[in-house]
Length: 284
Length: 183
Image (cartoon, rainbow over all chains, first blue to last red; front, side, top):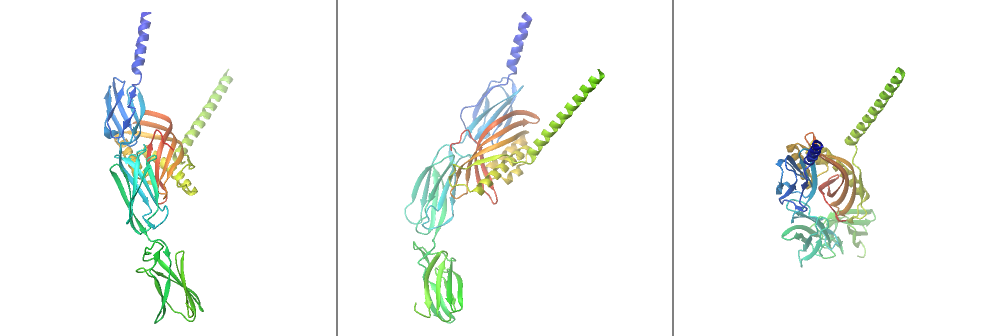
């Protein structure tokens, strides 16, 4: 009877010792911050830490396991494994550190003036280790037009991202679009260019080889000069038929020379905008 | 008596042959699955904003995200960071390349058994240059040290994914496991 009892006790003791050691990671771990994992194991074993971009492996001999900051720089789920006779594992989550970086996407880089909601700015908030900070953060967007007062707007991030839409200013020129969080700021420049031509007008000047037709200085509806290189189409209709000549704007004006025989009509257009029409060889 | 023994022997041989055929068939099937097919990805874009996802973009995202997972599993299994070039960029590529370098250094190998992804599109930027997804993946994850399996688990894992458009495809720019993602 006594022998049986001793055997039974020895068996339970063996089972208890053979059971895998338990790992107890902290409830909250932060990227880049050292911490320790408590272990119930007493003997020798191998400890593994598997993270999103990090694998650690080391021998250990019971007690607490110290995890260095550089072993947990990436946020996400980590798996801690302790292998002695058998392996035991536990998952824990490493949250991002405090916001330290901003990634700002601003589109487009060139935009017509007075275009409604034409500019979009998206800010992604990262910590020092490039982990997307998922907790809500207040991002301050700021637009500084070439003339006039700056406009600011705050947005709270959802899953690390905040965004705004902006209407371009009425005056052309570079506008600075910025985003900041704490003392971290990013700035992009959007070039605001003239919109489509407005009140497009032409005049005819007699020349040695026919007539020279030229536009008044081409501006958009806000008074900005339409950029040089923008194509203006001149169309002549006379007894020989219809002829269209394209000319780019140079120094604010587009100009062509046309041979005219008899009465003719000349019209002008740029993009979707039509200008005035001239009647030659008759009343203007 | 001898006749009975012969009958039993014949049935045993038949049973063994049938078992062998079944084993070979499942092995071949698993090999075909591993080598050729893409993981299943279901994309739900009903609640995405501020921009809606066009049908073609939706198909492209689904295809490219599936390819990203396939190449990631292969890259980790074969310790080949070059396989990441196709569908990863930025932080996601850097982190995975670092993980593969650590695999080589420690002799540890992570193996994914991909059982599908239920993906919700959360955010699509107004200019169409970034998309954020939440992926509820069903995965089998096996971690080996040399020949020894040190960890094996199966179940759901939630990821937050950032994808950006490349020249002819969408690329995974960030891929992070997360305990909870709010819609």
